[in-house]
Image (tube, rainbow, N blue to C red; front, top):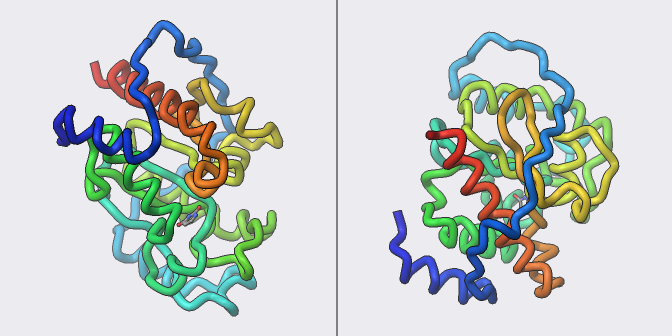
Length: 225
Ligand code: URA
């Protein structure tokens, strides 16, 4: 765990003034997403091996590496982004580029270490030229994410950015409407947060991102007590 002074330091690095009023946070408005089919629990390594060999969609032809995800397999926190970019594709690790550095700062600002949480993506292979993943690519990859969720059994999910939020909640609504409330994904609370790549371009939204992270922290406190 990170002490308060360190947390304030990371918040300052994110360009965020600390703002702690719980009263200003919106009330939870649960929204139930489609149920995922029940899958028998599988060994983590065999799932990893399956992803590494995957040829279920065309992204396998242009990828350098699959990006399974990284972190604690028994994490309370599951962060789900969109898909690997160039650096992630080269290194086989999620969120290692500029956006990844900001995500790491956001995690630290929450008093957590990156190794304590699990970070993965909606699609495990890089869409060429960093385009959005297509619907068929998302569908082909979805069983892997479902199994990751079943194996990790996180206490809370953070949908990082539009593609993750819209896919997980089966909606076309913009992030501006999905953030600021607690959704449910198969009885797991889910909070939507702006993607760090977007925050790097829209510094004014960082405050809202911090409010969403606080909402997630409060939600986890509620479900853990
Ligand atoms: N953006 C994402 O959504 N995921 C990554 O792993 C890297 C950048």
